Length: 200
Image (tube, rainbow, N blue to C red; front, side, top):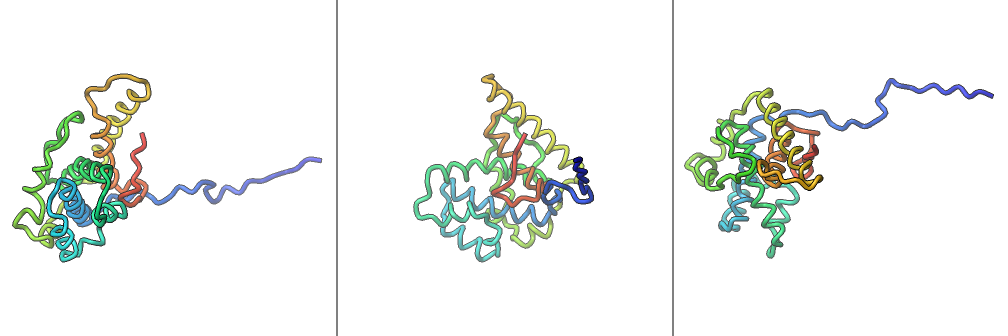
């Protein structure tokens, strides 16, 4: 007896997830402001003042679950502080996406977080509303090109690590954070901030 099976191919078999959608300038600006507050707390700025500022400026809802856990904890762990401070590299790419940063340090060099104080409220005289309303981002093509460049650098660093080779040109921690920032900006997989993939 021959069993004749016909496969229905009209619908895709695999769940491909949400399509990528590059985030608009306003969304990137709000994410940058919330992230700046989190990073500032990690570097020792007054936590309560920044919490009050986030609430007063309607930015509290922009915080991710991991960020909320960190800034509302009375005794955050060393790992939480470390992870939040490293997000400086992701913030750098968000600001680059908005055209506020031109030169990105080499993938073996950390950025200088002091740079953010000259660009972002509440450290500048520009209000939050003005900052968001005036935000403009680079073109889709430019953002995707940067994402591809960072992906390749991340792959290079990961491949070296897996195979026990030195990779002095690329620091894997730095490039992973930058990869996180640019992937969120381009809407990679449509994932929320904490769940952005940096696969290579």
